[in-house]
Length: 268
Image 1 (cartoon, rainbow, N blue to C red):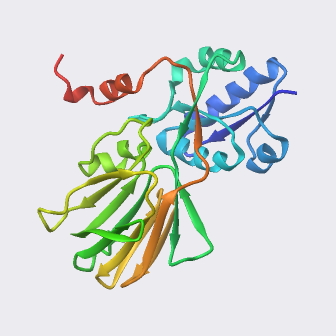
Image 2 (cartoon, rainbow, N blue to C red; image 1 turned 135 degrees about the horizontal axis):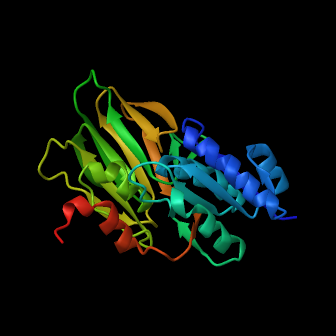
């Protein structure tokens, strides 16, 4: 029996309505459709459909990665750098997917561990360090593979994957990186030094971020979990042993997506 899972942003009425239409479409073709995550992982599915925006796809891909489930993103949001298809393309796209006319794109992920804890956070976009709004600037020291490399006196720091380069990192003035590049971005937020520049480093590096100045700093992992580190504490970030798997139909190249999504910056 063929099986498919749906990951639905239930805060969007359109996503709920579309999920009902997709369920009916699959059931007419003899597929089982699951929306409960425990059933999705227990039964096993051929792929997962994310209904929402880039944030919904980010969440779905992060959860699906340990199970090697590929995800098809349907964009019901605004910018949509990650989602493969738009609302009006969904059923034509599903015909291609069930006929196996697609490719799987692997996306680099990171793991982050706070103070040698046993708990590791897996991220597809970024790890973000932010000073407390009520406190002064902080200094974040970045050590690469155990060697001190750069200190950032700033309001914060973004450690980003290529996927995350079109998210918060883009808003912070970072470069857009192709998802095929195996690299990690370090981007300071409101740096208090002209020498504190963004860096692009190899994905093979192990990164230690130490709070070298300031009482505490907020750390966010893909926006889904937050913690606080104190002065002298560290977060160790490295490439994850798993990748996120995104379904690509080959309709849009990465340059095309960038041009399309940032078209207000182009002069035709």
